[in-house]
Image (cartoon, rainbow, N blue to C red; front, side, top):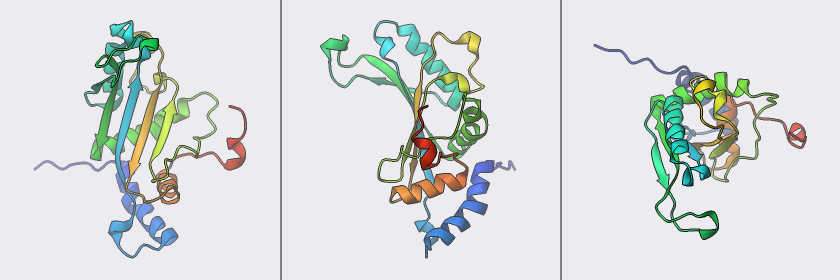
Length: 192
């Protein structure tokens, strides 16, 4: 019989985060406690309009980073100023759940974010009002799976962490207990 190894971040959630959230918010039922539901990684490639190889490279890099095959996103409407027609491939995205989600978040927190030059923490302003958090990454090179020699161009990505939290306060507490390094309000006003 094969035993499944639980990701370290999932164990941390069960052992440390759940009791801390109950203590802070006074939940009466365990089902009220917010949990990370999914992580969506989105790469928008405006350059893909003129160079299709850029999008192929982005798909390959995103599959290396996430461990899952990305879906190619297409333009919803035509914009003549950008030479964009409806249905053109303009990016890729991947949605991670369960074990892959926890493994990706663990690599993001412990490997990728510390590799950012002059990293002082992530902005606490990325919440959407419903407890979900979006983080913008400027270059894919912070992930060790991506080799500097193999990339065609440096591009960024948006990482959205969707939680079951009802508001930003609960979502922020959940991510903070999971180990997300948020900047303090004083540091957030400094030019970066």
